[in-house]
Amino acid sequence: AQSVTQLGSHVSVSEGALVLLRCNYSSSVPPYLFWYVQYPNQGLQLLLKYTTGATLVKGINGFEAEFKKSETSFHLTKPSAHMSDAAEYFCAVRTGGGNKLTFGTGTQLKVEL
Amino acid sequence: DAGVIQSPRHEVTEMGQEVTLRCKPISGHNSLFWYRQTMMRGLELLIYFNNNVPIDDSGMPEDRFSAKMPNASFSTLKIQPSEPRDSAVYFCASSPQGRSYEQYFGPGTRLTVT
Image (cartoon, rainbow over all chains, first blue to last red; front, top):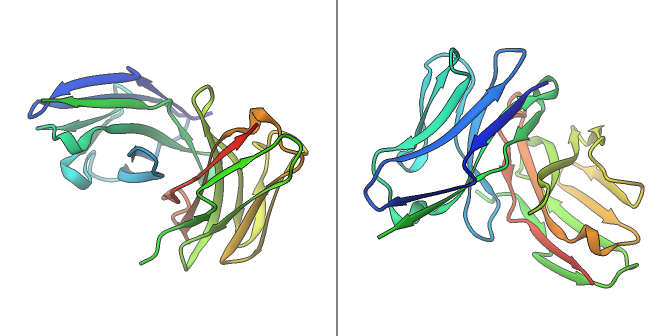
């Protein structure tokens, strides 16, 4: 079975600082991995995805993530945080033959002045 | 392009009443998913459809919940009778042919059952 674990339910950074949100996965098959962002009172929005190929994946709003098979990780980073990045971020892995996603428990990112 | 459309955005109802949530997927998408989000349980997949056919409803909590997709542009999630523990945000998502893992979410319906 495939699953993801997000370390840290709350992360706080200063504006302009590095953002690092952690995600580790468990999968018996080559994983497809995703990061979604949820702004208050909105649905989830796809930030980026890894399926095959290049292990460093770039997404929207300056975010990127690197697939590291040896570490079973897919951490999300952004070099410089902006106030507008404050949101909840979900890591997800494809499961169930390819049509389903299993989501992590989410990490709430707070950006302080 | 219009995204996934859900209605109503907010629903407040009394225990025992029937509730119907509606979803219009993105045009051309052939997979549709219903999720429920709560603080306690996070984001849970309830059911998903492929080409209007229910494929996996193992996440539907109990017989009080039912979902239909009569055509490619409309789906409903019905709760009858509703209970306070059904209070949650319900999301609909759709995905394109061949990339069913790439899901696009609607804004959600916040359901409160008193």
